[in-house]
Figure (tube, one colour):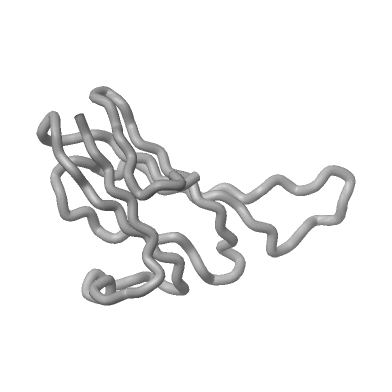
Length: 110
């Protein structure tokens, strides 16, 4: 899940994994603003639906979890800001400027 503060420390040799609840059946999905720094590289972006309840009818429209995984790259000490938005359709690179409702995390690499 996203941390409760907006700052995360990632030690050397570690990957950063962020998970967020969502529901792609609504047309909205978590998207990642392109990274500007040279500290992190996204290595996976996956969505997994929540399991069907046992013994119940097939549940349509159930939610799931979006998982972003990053690896450290670049200098031994640096800072990267990760910004996410939940929106319908693909967000074009130029549309991120001035967008409201962003969730941001400052990642400190040591």
